[in-house]
Length: 88
Image (cartoon, rainbow, N blue to C red; front, side, top):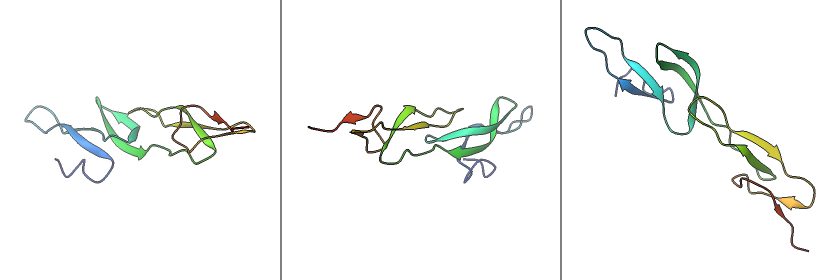
């Protein structure tokens, strides 16, 4: 792994050659916030939804996770992709 990419939520996609610079891309669990030259210069970790929220849109390598609050009388542990109704 290139030192250029390590520790920033990035990994080496292509190493440096005599014709091209090193290209970094995001690690799993991160999304790119600064794309350039077919790679990524900076990344952030995906948002983690909290209990009482559901995952409206999972994060990708270029977008953050979107969370939404559960409606009344339902619940989520923060990992569910929809809220579950309370047992009555």
